[in-house]
Length: 278
Image 1 (spheres, one colour):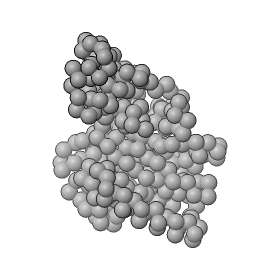
Image 2 (cartoon, helix red, strand yellow):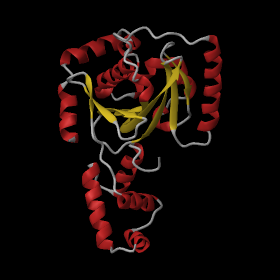
Image 3 (cartoon, helix red, strand yellow):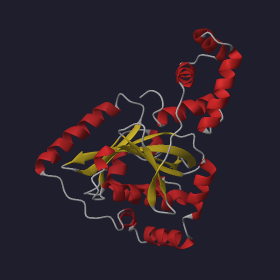
């Protein structure tokens, strides 16, 4: 499934699109690419501006106690509102640098080969948020994978995008960044508040398609949680009163189900896709 999905991602970007992106970057008009064909986003009321200030201050305080990379964007003002001091996003930059650069920061941090994809992901998210079909409030978050340049080295990063709804529209969004075990960029998904529902975006068809996410058995969830605590297979087998062979067989099936190759990758994938610890 993942191979075919990534093949589709590779086939949907033309040489013309890449040249357009490069030309706009040379002309320093990157922000126009992110908001191309996006409807006008209304401004917040004065009262909601005050609420936003409180939210930003809360995230500043929260980020000091968390080991996550978090940033907030105002889609109306087209700027960063807050950037946590986490190296996963910042690399050699500071939070202050990013706040000043705004969208011009992305070409500096996103892998050059992934930049056209990242721009199209941004557009697809905004188009969904501002479609007049009334389903936006059902969203839990969007998620995708993009390579970032971290101190000169490419690093695959899993992004979660939580829209912040004000007056019925998403004027802001909170981005959470995590290490990723997916090996190719893309895989844009919507996860809904109804945890049984999700959709995958097809760039070729330019539409969202419902998908079935893999589900975990109770035993698989327990093994993941105990492994996350550092317990070995023998310890897990003793706790569950089964043989080590049973644990190994369960792990093998789990790796195949999640398309990963190790318990470390399985834990990260399951946590990122809210299969455990949610």
